[in-house]
Image (cartoon, rainbow, N blue to C red; front, side, top):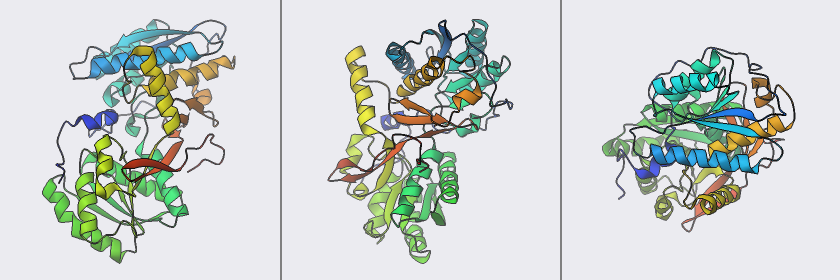
Amino acid sequence: MFAVFKPARKAALAAIVALSSIALNACDPVSTGGGPSINTSKPVPVALLVPRGSAQHGDQALAQSLENAARMAIADLQGVQIDLRVYDTGGTAQTAAAAATQAVNDGARILLGPVYAEAANAAGLAAAKRNINILAFSNNTAIAGGNVFILGATFDNTARRLASYAARQGKGNMLVVSGNDAAGQAGRAAIQNAAAATNANVVGNVSYELSQQGVINSIQTIRNSASSNGATSVFMTATTAGALPLLTQLLPEAGLNPAATQYIGLTRWDIPAQTLALPGVQGGWFALPDPAKSDQFRSRYSATYGSAPHPISGLAYDGIAAIGALVGAGNSNALTGAALTQGAGFQGVSGIFRLRPDGTNDRGLAVATIQDKKVVVIDPAPSSFVGAGS
C-alpha cells in the first residue's frame, strides 16, 4: 500500500503555486480597461518578479528557470522588442511589494510574476497605485481581479473541461469526493461550479479527514453514496502525493467498479511517473496541457540551458508571448486590461490560453486516461477558443 499524506513530497512541485489556506484581500477593483499606454516602436519595459533570495528550498532554481523561459520567449518574438528587467522578491509579500514599486518607478509598463499568492497580491496592490497590470504565476483565484491576472492553471478551468467531457460521455452524474482541507474545499466548489456551467450534475458530496484512517473511514460512505444517488462518475480532488493512491486502491475493493462508475481526477495523475503503475488509476480520467507542445518546450529549454525546466517555468514564457503578441499589433493600449482579455487568447508553450476579465484564465486542456501504465489522450486539447468552452 502506498503511504499517503507525506508533508513535503517532491511530486508536489507542480503545485507550488497551489491554493493557500490563508485568506487574502484581493486588489482593489480596477477597470478591466485600465493600464498604461505604450510606445510600440520602442522596447517595452517589462518587469519579471522572481523568488530569488528566498529561504525556501528550490526557489533559487525556480527563479532562474522562470528567467530562462522568459528570455527564451523574448528570443522567439518577431519584430517586438522587450526590455526585461528582473527583480528579486525573496518569496515574501513585503519584498514583493517593494520590488513591484521599484519596477514601476523604473518604468515597467507591466509586471510578470511573482509566484506565491501572498507575494502576487502584495505586488498587485503596489502596482495598482500606478495603474499597472500584473500577470502573476499563481493559480490562486482569491487574488485574481482588478489589475491582477493569474497565469497558473486553476481548479475551475480543469473542472469545467472534465465535467463537460464527462457529460458528453454519459458520465455526468458526478459524486464529488474531497478532502476537508482548504484545497479540497476549493476543488469541490470548482466542480460544483463546473456542473452548473455544463450539462453535468453533482449528485452528492463526500469529504474525508486528511489522514490515512480518515480515508479508510470514508470508503463505505463513498460507495453507498454513489449507489444510492445514481452516480455515473466519482470526481476526486485528491493528489498523487495525498489520498489518491489509497482511494483508488480501496474503492474498487469496496465494490465501486471503475468500469461502471468512472473515476475522474481534478489533479494530474501522471506526476510522479510511478503513479502510472498503480492498478487503481488505470482507466481514470484527468486533464493536462497539450502534451505535444509541452514536450516541445521541455526539449527546447533543455537544449538551450542544459537542464530540464521547472514545472511552472512555462508560465513565464506564456506571459512574454502574450505581451509580445499584443505589442506586435502596434496598439498603444496593448497592455490594458481590455487588450489582455481579448477573447481569441494566445498561443503558449502548453497550448492556447486566455485571460478572463475577472483575472482568472482559460487554458486549452486535453483529457487523458491511463492504459497499461501509460498516458493516453482521449480528447485532444483545442487549438482555438472557437467552440472550446469545455
